[in-house]
Length: 74
Image (cartoon, rainbow, N blue to C red; front, top):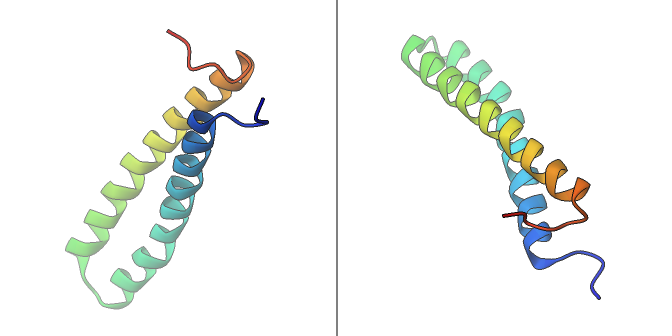
């Protein structure tokens, strides 16, 4: 048996990509603030909040899968 199922690998990849995306918003926010664009600051902040919430959901899902031994569940 493989140490990591394809599905678990997929989810860990999503988790990593989301985490990197959320972290990148810090730089984007600074750039928007430096450019004096309140509209861009507001939009990046909205994206950051939504992606952070999604990241938490994905994290909970993945840890739930791990707790069940890597099974996707019903």
